Length: 185
Image 1 (cartoon, one colour):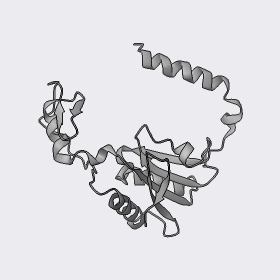
Image 2 (cartoon, helix red, strand yellow):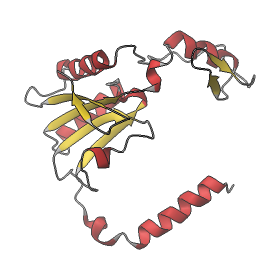
Image 3 (tube, one colour):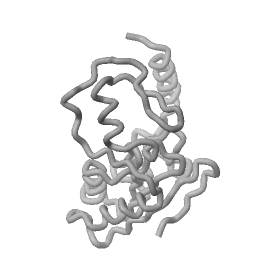
């Protein structure tokens, strides 16, 4: 089924592929030897804020840029099989993961899977669309202290039994208002 967004993506891909050039010859391992774990927020462009070109680094994205089991799995594969030697955890200001907690999203999902709305204080379902009373039991990895969330994720990665001792793990906050990376000790 065609949609306007799908058509836009297909047109953009056609233009991109027409100019693809030698990119098909890029090596599998990242040329610059590092990986970034960051948020899926559409305002973040890791290629721009970290000066990346295609093939330079691995970029792992999820809600909040959190060091979930799957993110750590990806980092370990990035190092063990593809040779990255340095890892970055980059969270950002004005993150949506600060706007809810686990019980809030679980309650919303019990009554509807449709998109909820936020009035600046409270999340509410906009329609009753087949929720799940069984719930989906997951660690939502929300946070209330941005710098502490970076510290926690850096520590979780560093202390993971599959993280090599020699891998530096750096923590940063990306400021969505200025574009700057702010180190977190």
